[in-house]
Image (cartoon, rainbow, N blue to C red; front, top):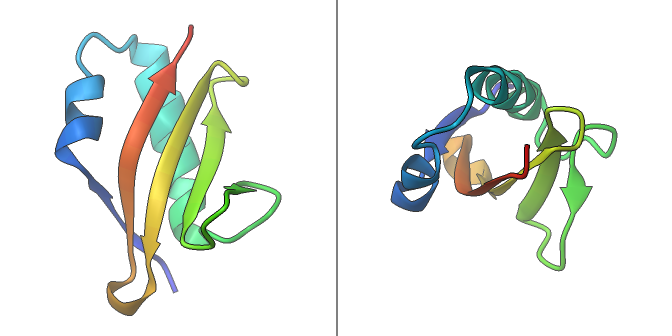
Length: 83
């Protein structure tokens, strides 16, 4: 099963001014996440089993997402890029 990505308004606003390579790295990690959002080799657990994180861009960025199993959606809620 492949999940569909969805960006929250907050996540969309955080993408302003992102470098092209960072956007590419984020897109790649989200493609991997959508294949299996619970994969411990791709994502990191948080205190809430439905909320996970993944790093991208060689560890220069982190994306936090909410897994909505019932509708097969991965909702991006926060993106951090330290470049």
